[in-house]
Image (cartoon, rainbow, N blue to C red; front, top):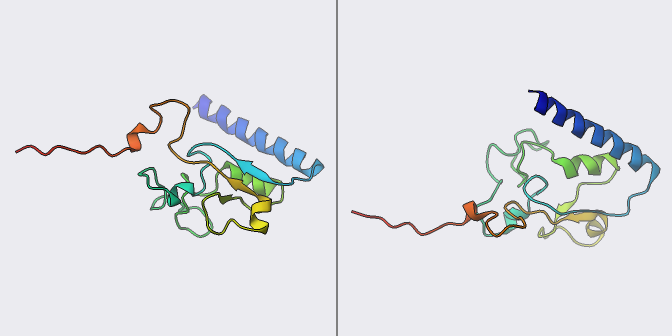
Amino acid sequence: MATSRSLCTFWFSLLAILSNVALKADARAFFVFGDSLVDNGNNNYLATTARADNVPYGVDYPTRRPTGRFSNGYNIPDLISQAIGAEATLPYLSPMLTGQKLLVGANFASAGVGILNDTGVQFVRFPTKITD
């Protein structure tokens, strides 16, 4: 209980600091790198089982539909984009990421990525042997 309260306080403080910094500086572009915590739909365009394009993901997003975010609504990059007064970044694999949209930034995050060789191994489909 205390840990979740501390974590909530940390994120609230971080967002408060970021929005304060955003008021003092003009953001040129916002690029996101990471894993499922910040993925906003790149895995929708990849052949992987690490997907968030089905219910219950997105139930609290404004469209009430799954977006590829591994959350029920906005994720941290969405909140940062709002804090700096920019539109949300698009997945770098999105066909809509062209021209002026690219100048806003891009999201390169993908669920299941990591620096260890065994990161994401749970998303690989192994052939199963059926025995009689």
